[in-house]
Amino acid sequence: MISMYDKISVVGALQTAIPFVEKFRDATFVLKLGGAAIRQTEVLQSILTQVRTLHILGMRLVIVHGGGEQATSLATRLGIETTMVDGRRVTDDSALEAVQLTLNGQINTSIVAAARRVKLDAVGLSGVSSSLITATKRPPVQIGANGSSQLVDFGNVGDVSTIDARILEEMLACNRVPVVSPLSADIDGNILNINADTISAQIAAALGADKLIYMSAPRGLMVSLEDASSLISLVDVKQLRGQVASGSVSDGMLPKVASAISAIDAGVPHAHFISYAMENSLLLEVLTSEGCGTMIVSEGGADLPT
Image (cartoon, rainbow, N blue to C red):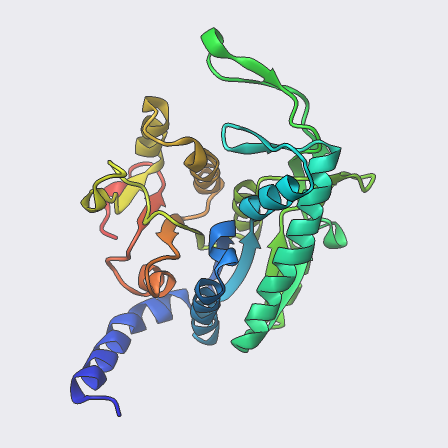
């Protein structure tokens, strides 16, 4: 039996959420899930239950997933060495095989199956599907400052040329939730690995999304990783670029921060960093004024209340 206190709490939460439900009804959100969240069954179920709640409330969601940890684990079992540069994977032919098996096989199918368990109508696909993403193979690039730079060949790694978001729009119009693996291909059908954070930003821009939400382990951007109270609740892209230049953004967060900045620059109003480890973090970030993570806005926007 629900206590009177709990009933009052539920009513209060609903009253608090109503303005946000009205604001974001029919809005499009892109949710990027990291591999660590996907690996934990209970965590994934919780996330997808929250996605279903927003879906029922009239919000359109696209899920983009990574799976770097799982790909590295499989590569290790297969005796394939994994090389990372600035948080990005070097993908030779052997590594590409491991990435294909992991992303399009294990992870995408697992997410869609978990969605079925919570009665969320999800459809799995990748950037290769219906030419959703056309990419070009990345040429060797110079990484690092002049004093310690190196020429890096990322192998079978692509950069996005075009995104044809019609297949996603068709699914959203049918009240379905697309679940997108970042594997893509060039115009000739050669499979290329693309960082999932990058794909998330590009898809958010192509869809004219209202929010791009990254869900990973950290609560958000922190002034100090050792100080839980140092969470940065609101930051604009100018301030964020300054943090990157100062070196305060760690290697693993660099691709996420760079893609968040690119999404804002492309017209996505808000990007968010939230933690899958916090209960109901997705609902709290979307349906409350305080949120629970970090919200990134365009230059000058950090003077505005959250």
